[in-house]
Image (cartoon, rainbow, N blue to C red; front, side, top):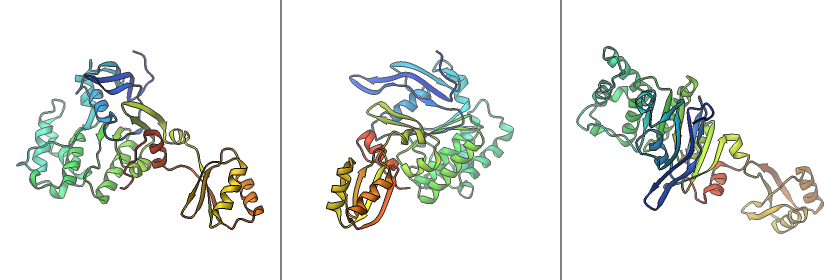
Length: 312
């Protein structure tokens, strides 16, 4: 298989469960060193795709490369270079957070047992759990459990980090800490693939996006590339909504809609100065005028037909 150099690349990746097509021939391209936001509503195929990438589920068709090697043929040499958090953490409830990490570290045949304590402490420090390291896991909050799972993925240096909903259960401060951690890892050269439904977080941390809908990849590229597929919106702030709408209609603007504060429309290629001049000439009381790029929420609703949680 010949694919462009990437941290993750797939060709025609497909997974079918009986008559249900969970993932339908997708071509992922996760550039080395990127923070790739993997987005889509529940049931769109994100987690199934991630499980195929990690060799946890066998693909029905298609090809996969992770860090330049075919998967799952080279799973034993690829996975030690990959850290992952998939479908929530699972730890021993009666052990402390540190003891759980020590057990995981001891099971890694590539880890030097002489430096286990140092690695464990560094991982706990990075996710802000050092103060709770001796507390039993059963006493951890959901957010603390999520952080411990991320710490487990960071026990050894990783070239690729795959995180499925890493901010699940975190309060706003914890979410900011995870965002900072992801940015820090990326600055050190680690590629991060993060599946999330928090659009505000994705927008702040990701350099690339992939959007899933009903098992298909409906958009992919840099943040700017994906946004470029959506049209800008012109908004007129006015109480003269009927007259303003008439002017915009005469100018050929599309998708005209009345809002609580005025009128919105799609300007196409019309010069904004021409729009304002026409409104003034028609004696529309204009309190404000702007051309806005669509939000990620607007874009993803148009791509997927479903809303997303945009809160952090």
